Image (tube, rainbow, N blue to C red; front, side, top):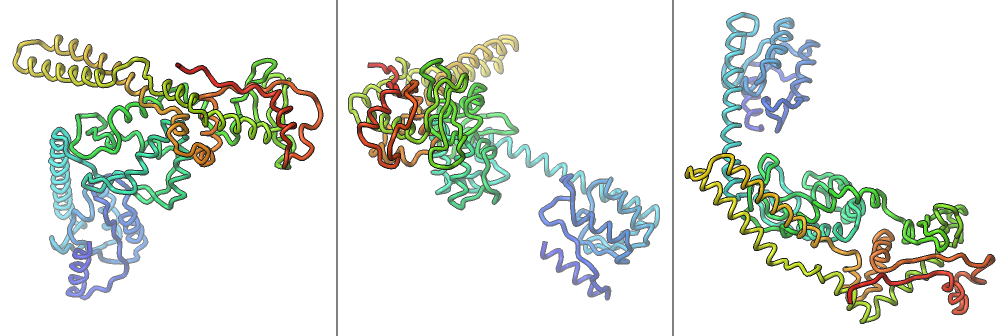
Length: 455
């Protein structure tokens, strides 16, 4: 760009022309079809007769579409603008011969661009088929050449685990923005672009060309294939959007159950943000109402005490890691064998041993079996919200570091909380410092029970 500008300035000096304005569209190809602000500004200035001559480095820097050329011809001819090029001399648009030359040059430039594009696409297709990294834009977590880039790669790895544990994409976006990090193009993160980012197959070293998975890549993955497929299945699950379309601000919202009618309890703030203002009430008949803060504190204490019991942790671990008798290694080996058989079918078709219908039916059958295996492995990769608590060296610290939304998911994973109808009146004389007797009385009307786990 700078060299072309220097050449234009040198030509202007030789011609004795004074520079009135400069227009450029840096990094925008004239062939791309994208709007070119510099070109549009130049046409406007030409139409307003702000200059009488135009210098360009080459005609293919000025136009490559016939539509733009015809607009240029109309305006330049009506305003008698002289056009000179560094590489091609005069461009006389006032005569039919000059316009013919301009159109020929435009057609040649367009053909060159199309041919270059075809070669580039074919080269990228060949590289993708060979498992090589191909990317026009840098992928978050990797350098431009496909090398892992920290701390971005670790952020992606942790975010995938958090998403599988139930953390919302919007919460992940907020946490990433809080670190000061931006996307590979310098933009802030949103729930939508974080979701799109995390399900990128590249993170599992799956090569994609024109939106189609073409095989395994030769770069270092950030997550394994099963985790990737599990995340894709998880975020695509239509039932998930019903219960996680918003992020809970209080742990019991939609979780606590009315002890009279069995309906879920909702969180309300009839007293505003004043102390004692928030509460939980039956969402159906308002048959049970309980002040919110003491109820959350009581349930939290029960949950933390439960996680401190080795026997309870052992039973929960058995449930989370039992995998229902599924042999993961065997499933993965079966999937690899099915893929090998698909490749063998393709070789047999090439050799003429089978016809097209046999190839299609055999491939469809193998793909169906592979999809079934991927579904099982994907579901198994989804992390239980309680798994983080179970693995934490300090469950209390882990709990305190979780959002209310995640804490609610942990409770829902291991406990049922039924709020019973209690007597009218004040529960605590001093809410900031309740006595043991007051807590005991309060607890008589809150039934918190662990969910059944495999022994």
